[in-house]
Length: 235
Image 1: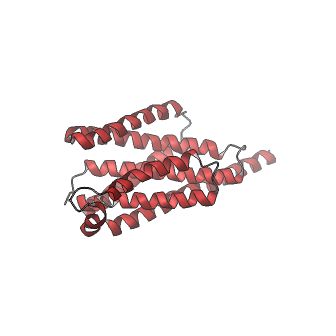
Image 2: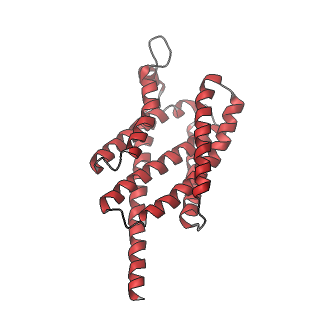
């Protein structure tokens, strides 16, 4: 019984340390992105760096918008081969690029809508994270379905850039809220399983914690932006 209790205590402590690291990475990324987005979210910055001399969107704008996708894939696909130091550098670079990309919301929405949506997003995210951590239900099939929906709305979102349909944009946003909150619960459950796997070394768990922080950060940002699109509060 004593050995069992000691093992249980060790497992709980390992989980606590693991998720402390996960949320340290996530909140660190949010802080970096938020500061950069706020500082760069001015008409002057947008005109200087994101508009071409002819008045169209510049190459820098598309680089900032698309680079995080490629960088995020590199981090998640090659994390076992990269050192923790390189992963951390790429993670910070990703957060900074996302901050530049998110800076445009300050040109579209008023600060009150941004602040209130952030807190609504935080509440929804926290609720689903707790659900994913505590539920005994296997969310694997649910997560697979949500990832297929995610791919679908991602493709639809790109198409809508050219179509410009408000109706389609609304539908994408509504589905997106469901997808990103559901994936939050699923990712929390998966991270808990990984944290309890004894086959991973301490360094590997540190890397997984970074990847977990990145994944939760991506889900939170997508949830926040999606909810923001559904809110009325434009300047």
